[in-house]
Length: 265
Image 1 (cartoon, rainbow, N blue to C red):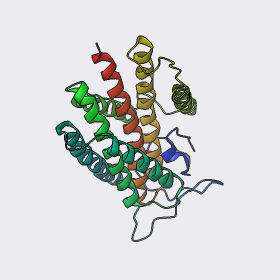
Image 2 (cartoon, rainbow, N blue to C red):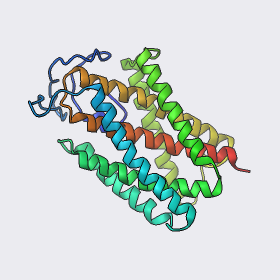
Image 3 (tube, rainbow, N blue to C red):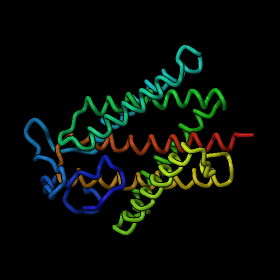
Image 4 (spheres, rainbow, N blue to C red):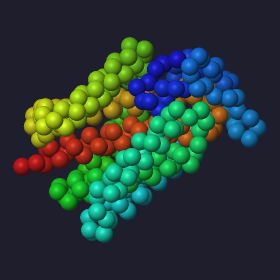
């Protein structure tokens, strides 16, 4: 089984295989320590590409609608940004941990996570938009462009998801997370590393993080393909949608930050 740096997919156990041929080949084995999945039943057919598309679309729609409503509320002054930002962040983190470590897929929890992230991102977007008018649309377009580009790259096989590439992406993601954690801890003591400011170093770090997030999509797409190939139950499409949203949230936040740096005086 290939590993993935996305925590949403890390606990899944599927059979080895390359790119999806979109045939149902039976359920993959449950590895020691992995969550695995039960064989599809008559009430739960094998997962298809359409399942992934529809579930991901529903998840993004929930996050998008709540995000837009929250952003408009912040811009019009009817919503103060900090309460929804904090509530959305904490609720999203809590639901993400439960989804990742829970052994069953719960569509309600996935949609709840999407709602929490919509609240969180909507509040942040409103704050950025007040300071840099037009930045929200730019960030959405930039995030969409990166997502579509990586999907095309994956489907055309321009970049193969090899074990070596997988290890590189996982290491890069872990390094990025460690760097952000160190920067956060040092900032609590008044130490500024300069990696989160409108400086050449800050811009370079944001570009690096955007690149790492983009490559994470390759692992996400590959894991979805493996689930389809091994005949995972259709309900697993909700888990795929959750994993993709995790990466999209990170990419969007980095895109917002980069655009803010570039628009700073």
